[in-house]
Each structure stands twice: as structure tokens, then as C-alpha cells.
View 1: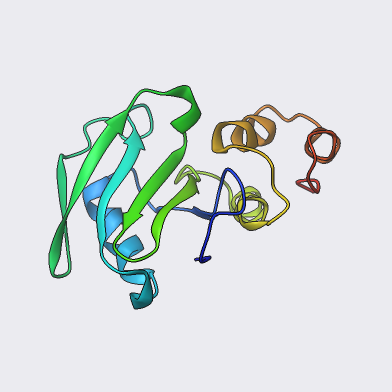
View 2: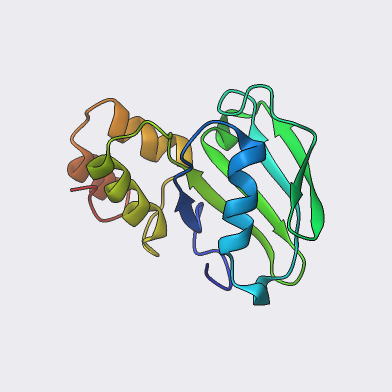
Amino acid sequence: MPDVSHGPLDEAWWPRCGALELELPALVGSLDPAVGTVTRVTVDTASWPGAPQTVLAPGHVIEVSLTDLATEAHAITLDCGTVGRWELLVIPPDEPTGAASRLLTAAADPENPLSAPRILAIAENGLDGEATWESEGGPGLR
């Protein structure tokens, strides 16, 4: 994870299933301890229907906030103790490996100007990802 946000997204997360209570502890456990404790996450209701209000993580409880904002679709915002907030693209669990790999790379690109909903729209709609992305200021999805 980066020290500061470089654009709309900091990186990406590819959970294995749609159960936030199962996936979030693994995500939090994979973070560098220097980031501090993740105290709260914000997720969109469409991607995480039925998400619990809290999730148990090793040694603490994480508050879960839900949002219906279109700009927050397909993203998770982590509020961390020492470094602030990170926004991650959430790649759908059923995304094919090749596409997920490209999305992971695209979201972590410091030149990426696109939000999570925009990156997924390009990938899911079969648009010419490279031309679309480059026309919006970033390297292509290749």
C-alpha cells in the first residue's frame, strides 16, 4: 500500500467471495503493520448486499459503513490508524484471472486518473480499453 493516494485509487483488492465478513479480515491481515489499525471501511451496498455493521479482525472490530453513491461503486475505503484513508478498486470475485490481473495493475498505476466504476465499466463493456484509458489521461488497460 502506498503512503499517500496518487489519484482516485490507491490499489485494488480481489476478494475470493462476496462475504465481507470472511474477506475483510484477510485483507486487513495482509497490510503492512506500519499502516496502523483499520478502524472503519466504507463499501457500496450493490457490491456487498447484506454486509454486516461490524467485522471481527485479529485483535479488533472494524466498523462497516454502507454507501449508495455511484462514485463509491466497486470500491472499498479503508480508514487506517496512522496513515489515513485508502481507496481500493474491488474486483468482482468471479472476474477471470487475466482480466483481474489487468485491473489490479491498472488500479495500482500512479498515472491512473480513473475511478473504480470507470475502470470496471471499461473492462466489462468491452470498450477499447487502451484507447479509452489513454484518452482520459492514463496508460491503456492492455
